[in-house]
Picture 1: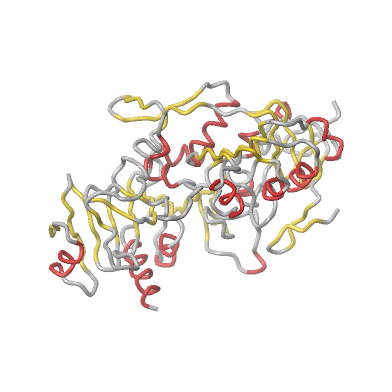
Picture 2: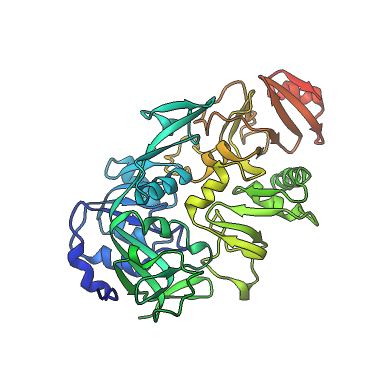
Length: 228
Length: 211
């Protein structure tokens, strides 16, 4: 299967009411090109699973401003002030999870695990309505695994088969999300021939990746700049 | 200026708790300042977005905006550093592989339970990694000025803000004193500020013991 695509060609994959897993921590590791396209595509009313809802007006912030987000599941949305306002008016549903719980839920979703018990958040407001179980004298909270319809992730390089390597802390949620969605679209800075990536450095094997899109952004000093 | 001084006093006092070989996670705010006072000690800084072996802030030429800490500030790496995904990183945190987590706090009760994520009178839509660090680090030190802007103590009989978890912290370091907790008793284990033990006791309004 030919995996290399222009982002515009992927619009038919996007239907209303899908759950999208979106990689990134702040701007680092965020698929900016894919999200620019999602903001413009026809479909909407998405449920978003992502650590944040965009940063500095970029990424998911654009999808949010395009009015396409009905619900967000993640750990830190406070920096998106408009989202906070929308939530307080009841226009945006929010499911807040501790960051480690979010990560583990996605890992489980991609690994065939239905849920897990974590000590995090026991006895807090975020534990309300959730099962607590004592194991060997420690109280744990049950959390369900998270899966998505489409994962939008960012890697540094892909080979033409779809094997992925990541750059520094831009790895964050991306390899996890690659395992946990029906369709996985990755944005990369560079596409190389099969065999050019060392098997030792590949973090995400190609079987998890459906489509590869070249990024339209480059890093220039302290910012991401759109170039293509 | 007074406020800045207080923050530096707290950071410096916390740095005394770190020893060679410790794996340390520094939270946002005052905890980040602790790195200025580590000196020659060989500690490994972990940041929960996926790095062990964090170095100092970059020079202008070194800036890589993908390489950031949990507060989204650009950082550098030290020799021997490693990168990993968020599930692995929080496995490191919850799995008891972090020796010391230093976190900011809004309130601490007399058992050492803390509230450090939900700010009063503001819609809060963020928790980040705070609760995972509270639950999973071997030792949790909280850092904060002792009094709020209106002068009320952050050391309280029982929390009025949302708890960050059942796990009680090991130490509360302020600009006046370092506190530890045992079965509801609050101990001052180090006194280094402008207030005497008796003055602190009357301003906090809770029973204090001296170690």
